[in-house]
Length: 288
Image (tube, rainbow, N blue to C red; front, side):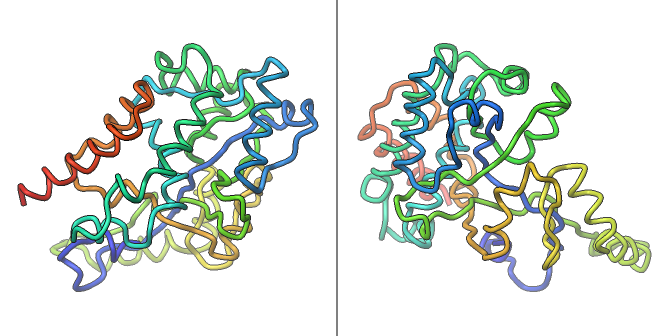
C-alpha cells in the first residue's frame, strides 16, 4: 500500500508501518440478540437485517452525515470491494471512470440511506458517538478508531465489528484497511542511532500489543492479532489477507471527494454525481 501511495519518490524505505486500521460496521450486540440476528455474510443478508431492525422500530444505521468525512466510510467499504483493480491508475490513463465503473457503488451506498434516522444530515461525529454508545441504533458505520471514543462515553457498551458485506458471494468480501500509524526518522537526524533504537523498541511485540490494546488498532507484526473480543469479527480478514485499500486514498489531492459524496447523499442523483466525480478528478489532473 505504501509503495502505491508514495508517488514518484519510490527509492528507499520511507517509513515503518506500525498500526493498521479498519473500515467497520460496529454493532450493538445486545440489540442484535434482541432481533435474533446474526452477523451477515452477504449484501442481501445485511439488507434483510436492516429491514428487520426498521420494522422493529429500531434505527438500523446511525449516520452522522453533518461531518462530510463520515460519509466516506460506507463509500470506501462498498467501492473498495467493487471498483476495478488499479482504478486510480486506469482513471488517470483514461481507461476507467466513475460513470462507467462506480454505478453499483453509488446505488448501494444510496440504498443504505434508507435505513438512517431523521436527523442524520444534522448529526456530527461526536454527537453520533454519544448517541450510539448510549444505545441508539443497531449499526454504526465507522472505523475501529471510534471504539475507544464510544467506550469513553459508555464503558459498558457491548460492541462487536464486522466488514460490510458488499457482495452476495462471501468469498469476494474484503475488509477495507490501511496504515494508520507510520514510524519514520529524519534523514538528517542528529541522533540516528538513538532514533533507530527507539524504532526497534516500538516494534517489539510487547509495545505493539500495548498500543493495539489501548487504541483498538491492528498490529502489522505477522501473527500478532488483537485479543479483545470486540475486534474478533476482523481476525479472519487479517489472518487470511482478505484486505483491500481505501479507494479515496488514491483520489487526487484537492478533489474534495468527501464533500461531493456528502452532496450526493443529500441529492441522491447517481448520474449527476458520478459525472461530477469524473469532472473534478479531471480538473485536478489538468492542473498537473
